[in-house]
Each structure stands twice: as C-alpha cells, then as structure tokens.
Length: 268
Image (cartoon, rainbow, N blue to C red; front, top):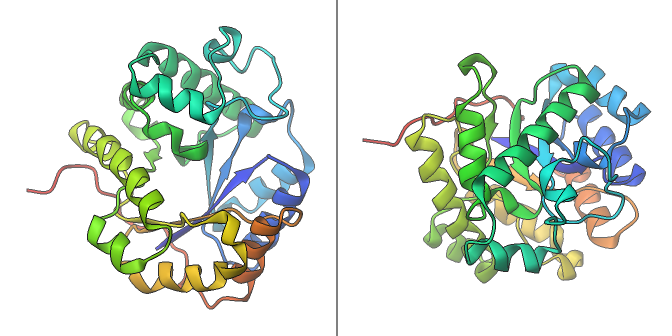
C-alpha cells in the first residue's frame, strides 16, 4: 500500500507537515506542485535528501491556483489564459473545450520545470484536484508519458475504485463515485498503452467534516487491498481539515509504505 501526501509546494505549513510525516515514515510518496515554485526551496531540498525512503512525484496544476508564477515554465495553458477555476475547467473539459495537444504541451512544461527544480525525473504523475483525469487532459497526459523513453516513464495515478467498495466504505460516497468514474476512463487509456498505474484508490472525503477524518482514515485502511493500492492524503498545519489529516496520520498505526508492483496491462 502506498500513502501519498499531496500538495508539497503549496504553502510552508503544508511542506513542514509533509516532511514531518516522511521522517516519521507515515507516508511513502510525496507529490510536488512544481508549477507553484519559482525556484528550489529549503523544504524541497530537504525532501530530495529523503528520497531514499519516499517516491517523489509531480502534482500537475491545471487550475488557476494562488501563487502560480506567470513565468516561462508554466507554458501553454497559462499563457493562453486557459488555466481556469476548477468548475470552469471541468465544464470546458466535459464539453470538449480542452484540447489534448494543449494539455500535453502544458504537462511537458511542468515536467521539464520539475526536472530543473530537482535534477531528477518524477517517480510518478498525478493532478491537483484529480484534473489529470478530465477529458482532453487525460488524453494529453497518456500521449506525453507514452512518448517518453521507457526507462524514464513515471507511473500515473488514477482514482478508479469499484462502486461497491465505495458504497461499503461509506465516506463521501457520491463524490467518490464521480471521481472514480473519471478514474476508470484514465485507467483504461493507461493500460491500453502499457503505462504503469495504481490498482485501487482512497482518500477522498468531506473536507467540511474534518473533525471526523480519523474515522474516515480507519475506513480507508479497512477497505484497502494488498498490492499497489494508493491512499491520498493532504496534511498541513494551518487549515483545519489539513491539520486533522496530519494529526490523524501522525497518530495512526499504518501499514509500512513500500513500493509496489504496478499494473501495466489490462487483465486478461
């Protein structure tokens, strides 16, 4: 089972919380928002020093996040004014308004900038707010990864999870089902191209009900399956819901986070 901390680079309190969890061996992967970083930070340098015990991935940004630097490393979608609020991006994607070649160019720019910041290629790719799964974006993502040399291809996160598992788990059921449907569409494309991806996903919850996150976390762990199952987390110290995740993860007895074999082809 992989436990991934998202949003590294978003804010100092998020970076600090994630680093504490890495040092406590509570997470096994960290997803970095390279597009929000104008230069390497001390926190990023510390994370890279800990890479031997965690995978470090690229958290792609397609929404217009606060602090997004309007520089050359945020390429086509930003310069063309196409980075949108989440709802607008979703609506445009579902109606065919996001072109895959624009998404591919944006992914390439953020991938290259990640390399400039870290002097490494990312172990995996995913997207802020699950936007890597949106129509148009997911096609561009698959084409980008498929075009990399095989030895450099990262694995790609999908949020597919069986509907019956989501229903039994009982955490933010409708929200999880909607995200999972998009995840299945991405997963199908990834497997068709032989691109590595996770098998199973959890971590989506009602962030307004942050007081109950410890209960949600136990539900996620109860229904996790062996293998390359992925639990997404969002630790931090300032926002209530992020602090609740940090404290619950830090206090929990978690399965050891170890790299798992990835699914690369559709099951027979």
